[in-house]
Image 1 (cartoon, one colour):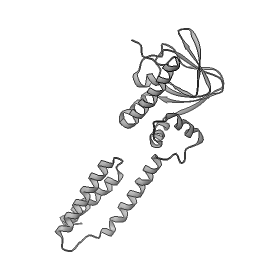
Image 2 (tube, rainbow, N blue to C red):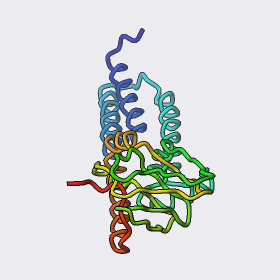
Image 3 (cartoon, rainbow, N blue to C red):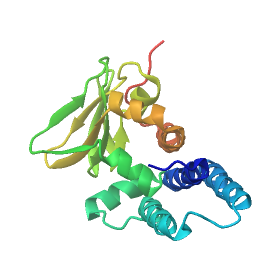
Image 4 (spheres, one colour):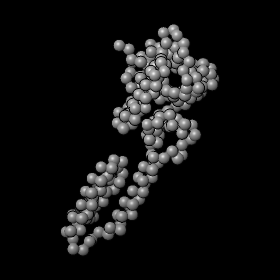
Amino acid sequence: MIDDPLLWFLGLGFLLQATGFFMRDELALRVLVGLGLLCQAAVAWTLSEPSFDPGLTAPALVLVNLVMIAVVARERSTLGMSKRDQRLFETFRTLTPGQFRRINRLASWSYVDEARRVIEEGQPNTHLRYIDADRFGLEKAGEAHTARGPGFVGEISLLHGGVASASVTLRPGTLFAQWDSAALKNLMARDPALANALTARFSYDLAQRVATSIPMDAAPRD
């Protein structure tokens, strides 16, 4: 049992610094580490001879820091991604590798061996999809179109809600990924930086569709 209050104060300084090294936010890290150093400095100023060996805490802090450096480095690197994931990551453009990994954990991949309609005009659309194919079918107000891929469908439903303004049909042999829109919205609500990056990506995609007069899926109706 430690009775010396100065040792408790010194321990508090260690805990603040250790917690700081676990923080992703640089400001929070600096604040916590700074407070921890102040606690330790206050003890050092109070004691004529240190009664707590810093050599016991320094290795632990170094280990925590190394772990977090590895985490941050992984979030900035595509190392370990499969070729398929790397291709998908390149289509997102505005996301960091770490943000993409969080998105990718929610994705499910499917392969269709016969034509499949994945979005129905006038119906709610519950998924964002990435179609990894050169062509896919669009139908709006009874008129059939062929859209060039690879590309996303379901962006407006994700960002604004509403019902689909066009049907989307996949051709046989199409590989596609899909995300549940509700789960993706929850993730975006918890991570504003990710939400901004996705909004920027899909806003660009939709602008390109308008420029080429391709019908947009999931357009909200008045």
